[in-house]
Amino acid sequence: MADASPRTDISTDDTDDKNQRFERGKAITVGASDSSDRSKDKTDQKTLRRLAQNREAARKSRLRKKAYVQQLESSRLKLTQLEQELQRARQQGIFISSSGDQAHAIGGNGAMAFDAEYARWLEDQNKKINELRSAVTAHASDTELRIIVDGVTAHYDEIFRLKGNAAKNDVFHLLSGMWKTPAERCFLWLGGFRPSELLKLLVNQLEPLTEQQVVSIRNLQQSSQQAEDALSQGMEALQQSLAETLSNGSLGNSGSSGNVANYMGQMAMAMGKLGTLEGFIRQADNLRQQTLQQMHRTLTTRQSARAILAIHDYFFRLRALSALWLARPRE
Amino acid sequence: MADRVRELASKKAAVIFTKSSCCMCHSIKSLFYELGASPAIHELDKDSSGREMEWALRGLGCNPTVPAVFIGGRYVGSAKDVISLHVDGTLKQMLIDARAIWF
Image 1 (cartoon, rainbow over the protein chains, first blue to last red):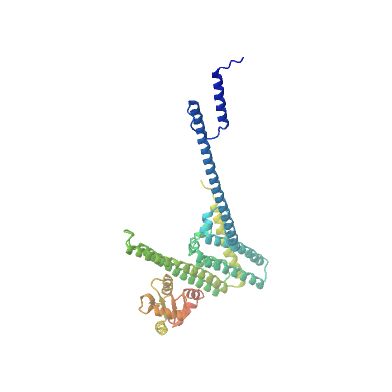
Image 2: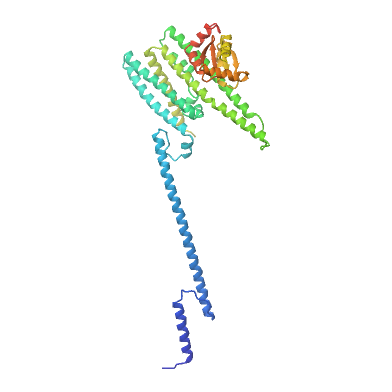
């Protein structure tokens, strides 16, 4: 039926137009005046805004990713460097904990290094003592015993050497006795054992001793006691002096150049005093070493062997006591 | 100045050069008093020619310079030497020989 009304014709034309514009439709079109065009534009504008935001978000995301990757790369580089340093340090014999305990590993490196050296020394000491014990039980000759005894005394010299080096690095670690077990710390004197006390313990276990030997050991005990007292008094003087140095002057009204100069002077003096602690530990260790050497000079080879075993057994029991103490059941 | 040091060192049986701030010197002084010796003490930091005397001591081989111990006019050593000599009984004998102590 060809009822060609003009209206139909017009509307068809309009629709065609709309369709065409829609086809082209992603393009930016402005300016249509009728209401349907305006709503079309609103949709277009929303779309456009959305697209612009997407582009912006994508750009930001790319930038973040780039920054992240750069950070990863530089961290990887740093990690490689640190691993190399660690390797180098390990080769130099510096003990570095492989646990995650960073703070201690870096700060207390000297202390941990010494603790490791001491642990190794104890292991070696135990081996030598076992060798000596076997020789004594097997009634080895004096000549054979002498060799082993000399080996042990030389090994004792080694720990004093290690302590001397450690004192340069961290004198407070040595003084604290934290490198020893708790029960040993009861008897701590200037970073180690008290020689006169050790002699007191040994004298009974070394019998039979000749008259002369008894007199020698008694004199040695007394000399050591006197030297210990002298060193202790020096330490007390040091403490007093340090306290006096730090207790003078007030910290108020900071900013006055006089006060600042005083403070710095105080600190400089106090630093000097702390520096002398190393000397005291050194003399204490020297006393220990000399006392042991003098004792051995007074004894026969067999007596020296017994003395060495007695000293070792005593400290072994102290360490065992410490282990028991640490493992004791608590409420 | 080395002469001054030597002169002072021979004036008494036991002579110790010290510094008032040196606590190791305090230890060695204590040891001598404990043994009954009355050493002459010369504090280098309180002496007008202290610095030159310290130089002279260094020249004599004293290291550290204080405490510097002389017995019977002869240089015996510093803290380490004195303690070692005391442990093996030599120090006492030296003091007896120099008549700083009697037993």
